[in-house]
Image (cartoon, rainbow, N blue to C red; front, side, top):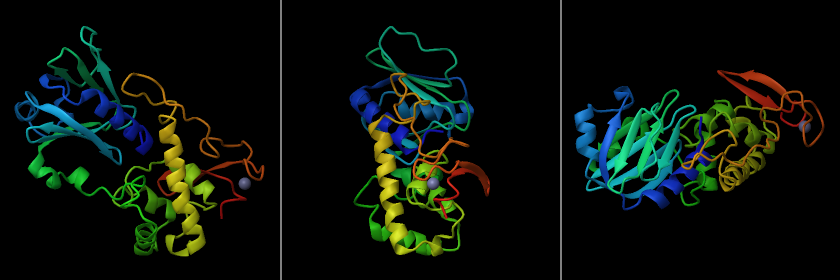
Length: 271
Ligand SMILES: [Zn+2]
């Protein structure tokens, strides 16, 4: 599933390409990924112009003027691809927007994808996006004190569960969490309340540096961007490296079950 680096990278590309393009028509092959009936979806999108594209967590926010917001979650293995004028849109797409200049944006979901639209004035009542937590790459909102407070509020929960809860911090999933916890030398099941202030500082730094590094590389090597290009991030420290040596101490990396998720850890470094 794309996480913050992939989604942010995609939203930057969409912002650069789609601003100023007007939606001339929409083709929907799978209406169940919409939040409203098709006629309402068309009413809120067709004839409107993209003015801005941003992201929070795993969601892309496309501002359509006048007065609508298109909300996209690619789920697992989903793709959003741009097609130049005259280029055919692949037929396995669930949703495609045709723009007035002849170009198109196609959306393909393997699992759990959503293509929602709301009037801008009703954005705050869109349940799936209105409760998204802090953006870890936004320095104004993701401050050290906000992070420290968050861990205090959830001190009885396992640190991994706190970080994966999208209502706390938006955008970390079971891929990037692996190296974030390793870099902070924390076992995923440690209670948030048992993480010392110095360890919290390390964790705070690890979240920002790991996500920023992956974003700079265009996200994961097995995810595709707007131009169907793969990301450049593939060198995990411990993630998906079961049995391989820990880059710090050489101990074999273990894959362990942590609640409902799997974790890759160095049993010597992460305590
Ligand atoms: Zn180690």
